[in-house]
Length: 223
DNA sequence: ACTACGATTACCT
DNA sequence: GGTAATCGTAGTG
Image (cartoon, rainbow, N blue to C red; front, side):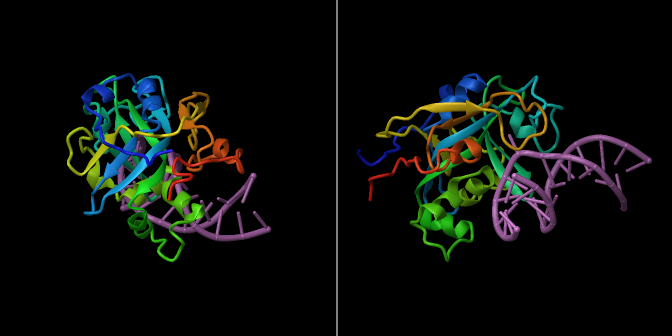
């Protein structure tokens, strides 16, 4: 397999699809950020959809507030929300203006791993080990910290912002996606709005762990 | 001003 | 497997 490349930036048309379609389309997409003057990138491997209506678990379920307003902004807006002293990043999508967004829960780190290690305070660990790399990309709070994303970046436009955006990934190996209920919520538990790349090392939660021993990375076999 | 509550994580057995 | 830490929000008085 050739080394992954990330040339084509995703434009407005990508974000203007319905939320469940966008959630699945985000799998395998590369997120780039240069928020601290260092290029960082990772491949999205796990997401969850949060609806604009009929979804009690969504931050938009009880309408717009001071802190969730960017969730009601245009498709392609970045929504960053603080929870348990961490941050989670979401991609706003259709239906526009109604509070639909996709939470990114796992990325496979690709570029800038040394900086990600510093961002997470893991400098004394071996940055090449799988264990360390999983601590960078596995989980919504961890990946935000690795990418240097926090509340200051809430509301940025992923289509036009010069420092952060989404790119089509080239030369990725084939994979299969799977669906499950969402993780860590107490309401609307039954909805199957979690999507992940089957068997990827950087998927969080039980459905990823149960494949222990048979997991793989996009960069397997690449120096 | 006070309280309850997480779209989490680290660390424990 | 389980649980404590932790703090910004939002609801209430």
